[in-house]
Amino acid sequence: MAVAAAVFGFQAAAASLLLVLFADSLAVVLGVPEGGDRVWWIAAQLMSCALAAMLLLGGVQLIRGTGRLLLLVATVLELTLALGGLVWALVRWPEAEDVETGLPGVAGDLVDLVIGWLVATIALYLGWLVLRTLLVLAPSVGHWLRAERKVLQASVWSEEQGQWTSPPVRRTRRAGWAVLLPIGALTLVTLLLGVFGKPLLPGLLGDAETDAGASYRGDSPWGLEFYQGGEPLSPPSAGDELYLAAADADARSCYAGDMAACDALYFASPVGDVYEWYGSSCAGRLDHGSAGGCVDALGLVVD
Image (cartoon, rainbow, N blue to C red; front, top):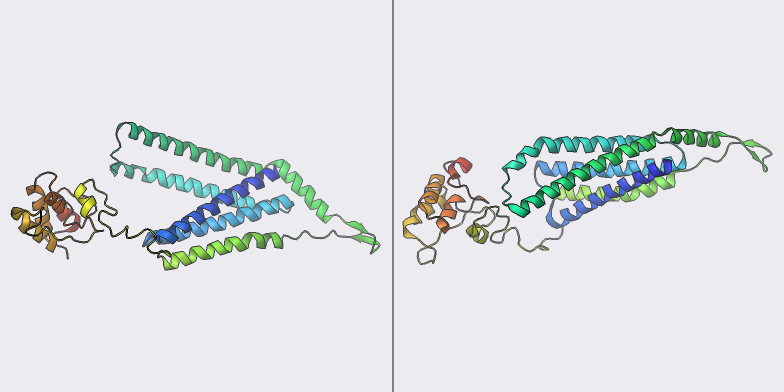
């Protein structure tokens, strides 16, 4: 049972480190989240590294028969974090109702299937943590550790010294360094990424963030074609194919920052027209259509 508990701990540590490595790889390409999300990202990464170190060192100690406290503490900590994350997700779950998936029929059933799979996976993970805790606390593991402790404390006859002596102490320093050095290196990389917070490989994804339509969340084809990351867009000029003289005045006022003009333009434009999208997106300032809600979203006047 001791070996099984230690192996479970090693597996959890490996999974935790793989997640950290994956998140760091994404940060190298895409950059670290900004604002308060960056603090949470760094905290989660460092917590994962610390948990992995505790699980690895605890598993080594248990296999060597020198104790189970560290593995037990790490397992309880992991279980606490998992339950806390589950409670947090359940509390925030109603917010998902505000998201328009636009996936009817078979696609909606597929979403339900994925949600069911996630629930089952979380249940199995929590059960796995409980099983590891029970293995660490098993009476047979305690009996074995006490027997190992007695063996370590028992005197042995030394032919060279001609007397009873204490057995050599089992050293775990090398194992500790073997565990801590790679985790320490990964932690250092995480801290560097968290501090600098910019992609180390600029241009790898091209100019995806500034290309037309990049990160546009609405369903208007005009937004997918013209959206420029929230920068106000100049309205069509006289002579352009999309130009409409009757809408030009409101469009230019909207571009200048008059949000009431944006709303007026939206309501006055034909459905599906470029000027309808222009007014609904507040001259391209929003990454979705506001349906005549620019004043509510941004105020009467913006710069």
